[in-house]
Length: 240
Image (cartoon, rainbow, N blue to C red; front, side):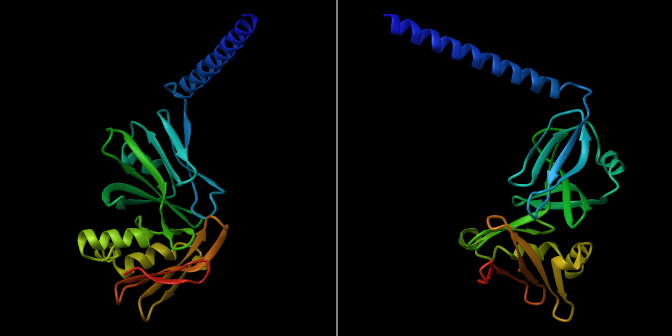
């Protein structure tokens, strides 16, 4: 009987401690979300996740996910107001992500592109992310791109079976050679190579697992309208 009482006492103490911790954390959260408290809205870069870029400020809700270089915020501001607050803003554009078009703002800083785009979930709710694509051949590689492309053999196979066309066709439907050329030429020449004669643009990627760069990770061929890839082990893959 005494053992049961001792065990019950321990359980009660643990429950009380947990309750105090939960309440304390909730109070901290409530304080953080308190109206009028200005918070930085940050997002990580694509090549190594080793830098936080402050893209905006808000007194509303904010959060970030370092794994996928994404953030979110709720703020009672228009695009015009957000543009005026950040000197890195290039302007408004249509962002293609998750097979959906979003009205967005594009930003550029230190070989990284970022965007803020409106969602349909809430009136003043914005998603923020680094503008990159995932390329999965053997390892997961991040590549800076103007639209989101989730390139893997599985995705490509599903797309062909469902839509009877190549997954990469959508890229060439949306963008011209000159637009993509302008996009990459803001970056350091270490990250891209342009073959003007053949209208090919090759872009460097970052192998997340091994933490190494992959030269010519994606090549956009605007003459043949194809995208090819090169994995960190040198494996070449035609995604069309």
